[in-house]
Image 1 (tube, rainbow, N blue to C red):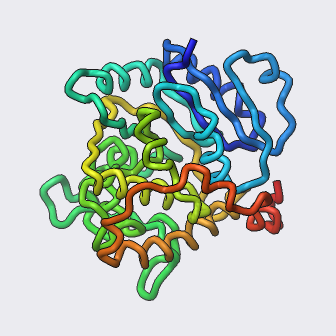
Image 2: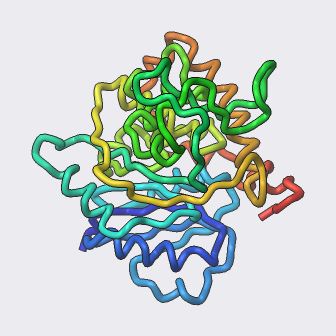
Length: 302
């Protein structure tokens, strides 16, 4: 039977896979397949799972993700990392909305919570001053040396309140993607569900990027400039882990995201950006077979 959903996961934290797998089963009652790209040995508790398929690669997580897209058989596709857990029944509830007649051809932007809850001080309320901007840029003159820095008047009591809001899921809300020619409704695609024919038709993610975040922002802009539309998930679908700066095994990913942010800014400050549409589906084949940034990283070369 053709799966309803393909879940794509570039991954290396093998101790988390079984728990994540179980969380998807508790979140979605339809047929689904689990596609994992890794360089790790498959753990025993994952070897006999009928709907799991594995491919072995040392490319960057984004380039692994793109390769998995070419393997996907599901009617819909979502891409995740291995530091997340899905909430019970959340995928089902998102599909209930996504498959309504009036939403045919749309994709779903899924809400998530990340890291620990932080209370904003001071809190000025919903009608006070300019909105909140969330920064992932390197430190600049006059700015706090903090990967996540809040620059404007907080209108939310906590970061969780912000992540539950629709505002959080707009590229324009975040300094790292608030460029002149970024589409005003381009969504953050950290967690999203796409019709298979839609995302494949646009060639998936452009593998000129090293990191998933900027590739997602670029994909969002390409989709919106082509006239596509989306729905917002009615519930928080995932609870995600979070590592500050380049801590833990996150160093190479953090460095790649910062490097990509510079390229993204340059690209989307130019009017030609709004003409971007399809990418080459097989573009991952033009990327290095071994991701040098990870291989060279002293903290964790895996």
